[in-house]
Length: 387
Image 1 (cartoon, one colour):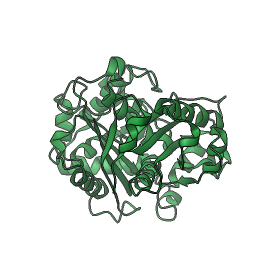
Image 2 (image 1 turned 180 degrees about the vertical axis):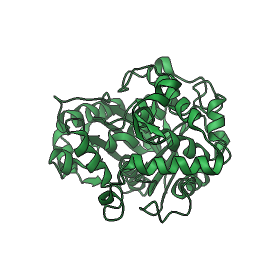
Image 3 (image 1 turned 60 degrees about the vertical axis):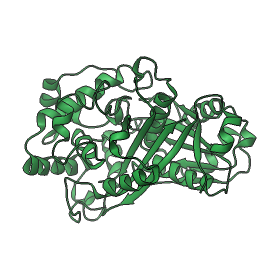
Image 4 (image 1 turned 30 degrees about the horizontal axis):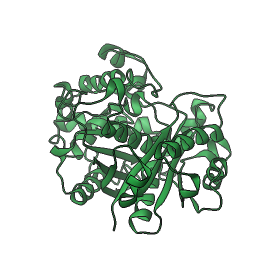
């Protein structure tokens, strides 16, 4: 398998865009990524598109050919990939394998979701389809309810970390203030988080990620060709792991350790030949505040049961030991489901290139992205190194 690098990135702002269509979002982010890569459209040999649920939310399927037509890519293969909230990272992984195998030299990976034009009830029903419909969703177990159960189980096993969960939301909102693409530019407090409208105890509205519209694209190329295309710092994909777990919460071995994350991360670290302590920054799937805490433990950054205290000590802050979600994360940058995993990659590549502007980290050579689907039934972990 040959080395593969990211040579182009592009994304829209993440937010609520009632007047923008799927087509608009795809065109903006896709054109940006191709231009950023310094390639012609004729250089793109395949398109991997990520989308979660546009049939239900927008009445639009067959996203691959749609995006290819919008971007004027001609008769190249166009494939749609779906894996709930991990769809973007799954599409990225499939594209990575295609280039690493030698099948293609240059490919485009994109993700898009448009959700905010629908009512809360419709969006909730659409997202719930990423769980087991017969055994969970049809009985009223939405994802906030499921992750509230996970939070309460975490409290039982490791102690009440409600205050630290609120700190997580506050930190991600602070990070988003420096990100022009973020959906929410709003400073919040611990008391505001804890006293906000209850969604599913102990989660309030500020513990939950956003309903968002947006698109993100990435151009991948064989590393030995990357410098002939791009004049920017080459960002090599040095590790990528994928793992799964049961779809239903009742069948999981543990509610406070996501086995899919542990296994995907292990694969990625072995492939990259590094340990968690060598990661300079990570974009971690924070669909709920408790999820970020658990994920930082499962990724090996902190010992089990210590993630909340590490956060409270400032270890995950932008100037901390391992900066987490300097983009604002799903919590404040936004969560346009099909684009989320690629938007995480956009941030890591931006940081490794030194292009983060006001939010640029001092040390950014190795970055990690972590993206889960459903109740951590699917997980992809990718590791990037600036060359």
